[in-house]
Amino acid sequence: MDIFFTNPNDIPLPPNEVKIRALRAEPYPDKKRIRIYLEVTPFQKRPFGELVISDEDGIQVAIANIIEPMSNRIEVVLHIRKENPVGKYTLKATISFADEMEEGQRNAEKIVRPEFYTVDTMETSFEIVE
Image 1 (cartoon, rainbow, N blue to C red):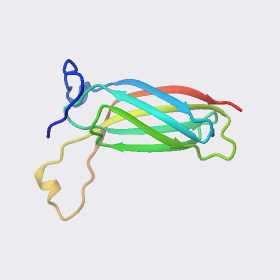
Image 2 (cartoon, rainbow, N blue to C red; image 1 turned 90 degrees about the vertical axis):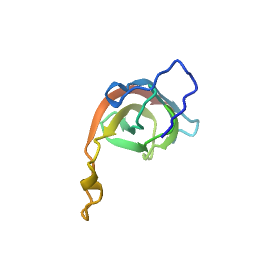
Image 3 (tube, rainbow, N blue to C red; image 1 turned 90 degrees about the horizontal axis):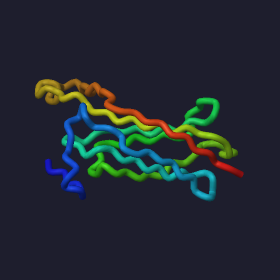
Image 4 (spheres, one colour; image 1 turned 120 degrees about the horizontal axis):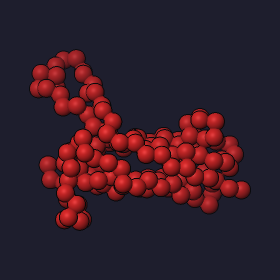
């Protein structure tokens, strides 16, 4: 599989060296949608990502799973599941990789889910104001 990145000086890294470079949350004026910007280092193997927004009480109000993105720069919009979204929030990003499955596991009649291991996490805070 070929993966192309825009900066030729950014060398794709093996899974255990991939890190999160940037994480931002920008609320829309409607106070219900949040634009998330996530950038990771270039990768040799496509990662898995998870974005979780929690309110001040630690309750999850939005979540997204990113499955094997083609690019190391990802933008998504999450919707806050709260009646009144005004308040402080925490956004947590996690980057993981799946363990390689052996050929026998792939062809087995029983479905075997791969194990995932986390290589990096990052948190940031943001506020939705009245």
